[in-house]
Length: 390
Image 1 (cartoon, one colour):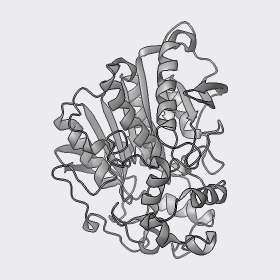
Image 2 (cartoon, rainbow, N blue to C red; image 1 turned 30 degrees about the vertical axis):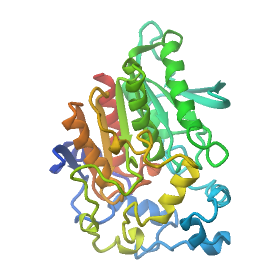
Image 3 (tube, rainbow, N blue to C red; image 1 turned 120 degrees about the vertical axis):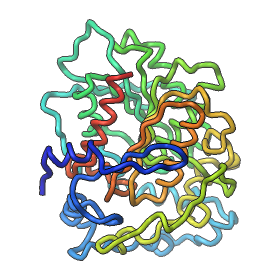
Image 4 (cartoon, one colour; image 1 turned 180 degrees about the horizontal axis):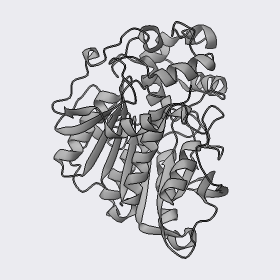
């Protein structure tokens, strides 16, 4: 079923405000459905794509049986998670993690030019995709959005077909970049982190060539891409390069990877009520301390580097002042929501301008189905609005 423009308008308006660690979080939904239930448009598309049955159930996946690995030894640190991650990368080649897939919809009214260049960033040759309107005015400088994809740092590869980025490019008249950074375990921290930083500096230094305003460069992404973004803003600050990033866009970011928590942060399952139609699909949300899958992704990416590194666990940074304004996007049914919204409060307390939006009925990977549900388009519009007012 298709959604209406009225549903998008309603989502943008919000249903109310939640105060989290001092931050105002706009709670958004496009229809009347109870807290803890999957968005009806998402439910429909997931059923059509055979991701759910008619009852709304999702078949579980036995990773140990599928891959033949000893999960217990991986969790205990007796074995390196590298081989598991390589197997999972192969299995997930057709899994949708971003809107760069055939399951999203192109909502653009006009044509978007998509190009790429292969360059050496840091130590590796990687592909940098670029989206812009075909009729873009080349006589003026445009805003810019540098996007880093999700995928747990071990999977995901942009193919230049991201329908959400196309939409943002058209509606904001911005130049959008999407970077295919190197993946772990072949390239562990800080390789991807350094590559992404080099990309930001490269685009900043070549702003005139790309017809962009160097004072209006936003950096962001979802999940692993959001984690990279948060760490990169800290690095730019520490190196005295605050001018590189004018806006940070954090979509469902993982920001804390240790048992040490910042003041006031508590992870509680009670913050995730799940109602009829959502129990088996979402299962139990889990804390970082007990979610072995997240732990293995972190260990696979960081290698011997401590998980407390503030470029990986930005919530542990002592001083967040002076960072660029932030748009923080969370999903109601995502276990990462609590830390992301708490971080929004940390930024606000440090004097950083913050806008936070929580999308009801959505989960961690919902934006992979951009164009099928109103919250996806509403999220893109929020990004457009932030880009145009930079």
